[in-house]
Length: 104
Image (cartoon, rainbow, N blue to C red):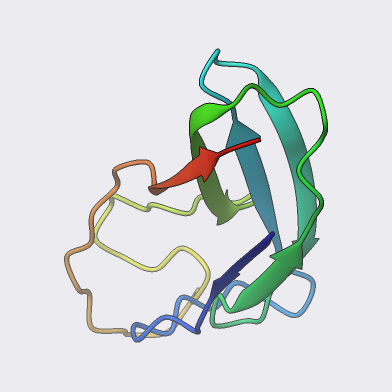
């Protein structure tokens, strides 16, 4: 299985050492994957994994969000662009979730 995303259009400036946290939760609510992987300054990443054998069949959820940073700044300024004037864009702070169907 591969989870991937392109760079964001809004120049989030995650930094050179940015990481994304990928979590897969099976239909029973069990977290079967919880890992981090590198992402670009703009937020692009690719993470590949094998679905663990103990994962319950059925609908699962995949979330991927920047690790260990304020990924949804609701202050109206980019907290990673200190000292710079940047144009703010409204963004959703809802947890990003994609569905995944596990079959046997």
